[in-house]
Image (cartoon, rainbow, N blue to C red; front, side, top):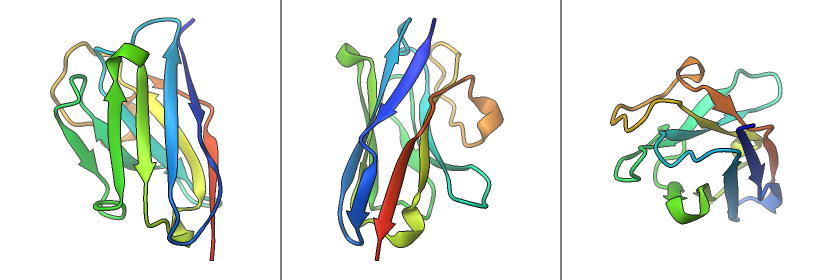
Length: 127
């Protein structure tokens, strides 16, 4: 059974850093575009960052551009999100997602464009 599992969340002070990981199991996701989304309390889930299947293209929400970096390691079937200069408004549950389309070079910004989802990992930034 295909599965995405996030880890690396936690409590950090404003200005700090965290690195989230998303490990795929049950099948390879190396041919799929991947993304990170987040959902804060009382808000809808929103796009954070995306990466193409090859890793050659990355794209970000304006709110995190310059602070977050998405990357992937095909050998480990893993996608990571490095988060620096964290702010209180980054507090949310972070979800990893995959689009089940082989070798697509398109960019995907919305929830309904993704087919697989992890359970999420909590990130709390204290001021």
